[in-house]
Image (cartoon, rainbow, N blue to C red; front, top):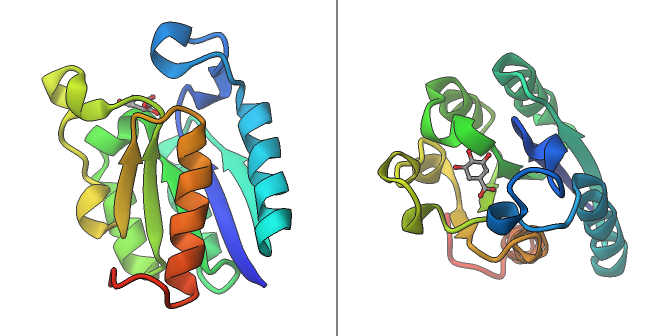
Length: 150
Ligand code: DHK
């Protein structure tokens, strides 16, 4: 059974309360529950973690080496600023699917750049909480050898 870490970054613990017109009404607890349910249905062992701290997220990525087969990552605002997260992903060489609830390319210019995207398998954004499920499916297909992504 493939093991997937669903890792969320800063401010995503406030989903449901935080700017629902941008991020939706679904809480992180609901997203984590949906990921667990989807994992059970599709044969993935899901672990969910969230932190507001860059170093804790780096540690979580390091800890995924040898314990997880892939990562679904919403790095929040660190997406646009963190070389450390990018380097952590490159260091562990695990497949990562980048997720954003909002369409970052349709928002402020500073959100258009992602430091994660160049080291990710791919990016899913703009589909709200459903994006996490799409990301799990994309990662499962990749781990199964079903996509041509590297
Ligand atoms: C979440 C955040 O916290 C923002 O900083 C990103 C992302 C977008 C999201 O849409 O999930 O810019």
